[in-house]
Amino acid sequence: MSAASTTGGTDLLVGGRPDRDVPRTGRALPLRFLRSELSIIFGRRRNVALLAVLAAIPVLLAVAIKLSSDGDQGGGGPGFFEAITSNGLFVAFAALAAELPLFLPLAVAAASGDAIAGEANQGTLRYLLTIPAGRTRLLLTKYAAVVIFGLVATALVALAGVVAGLALFGGGDVVLLSGTTTSLLDGVGRLALSVLYLSACFAALGAIGMFVSTLTEQPIAAIVATIGVNVLMFILDQIPQISWLHPFLLVDHWAAFGDLLRDPMATDAIGQGLLVALAYAAVFMTAAWARFGSKDITS
Image 1: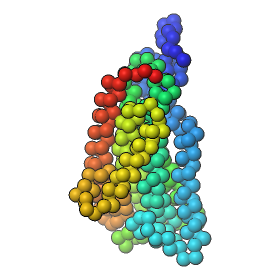
Image 2: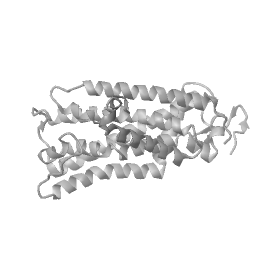
Image 3: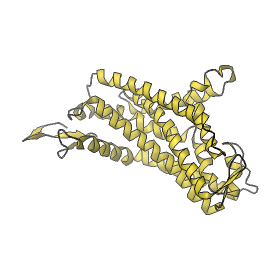
Image 4: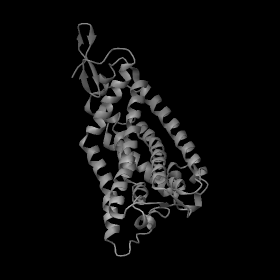
């Protein structure tokens, strides 16, 4: 594979594939980069399989509760499971809570850990950098694709939960965790806010994965390391002796999306979670930029 010159232009590589139609300069280049990255991420069989698993879990959850004699599943979130039989919308919230520790982070880790390390492993990173966009733009474009993938994965879980829940348990007015009643439309709006909040949290995890991806040429190692960091933070968050550390852990604030189901919405924990996510994203993307900008690309 090469970046051979042509008459009047250069054969460019986008996402590891030659593309003669990409302009050498101009505003269209970042959009072409992003479209190419998205097509690669959503086109990988591994990622498609992960999305299928993410969507299947809410359906299996709803079916299991429907078949249960008493519908009492307990745990997994702040009152979500207990409310499922009264309103199917809560299947979506319960599924988000159930997939929060491992499955959703795994999807984000798979996309972010493969971002740079995957190109280096395939030997396409050096040619990809022949595009006149610079390493910074390349890194940011890949990160944007990871963030979008995390948003789609989270929204897919919520959508599958809504469809399965309403089909098996019906809808109607939503009884919030604070005991007040609101409309189904308002409940869907709160679910959308939950998806956006969790997607912001996963964007911070994606930044960690992007940094790890710049440290190795083995995408599997980057994915495992990112998941390892996620699991480690969950373990530390359960140790009461280091409670002073908990507010600084990224995962400590993930379950705060349950506060969106109160009346009025409790936004203090949500705000803290967004600030912590922003801090993690800024620190690790800066570290990724510093590492990638000075990295000797040999493959």
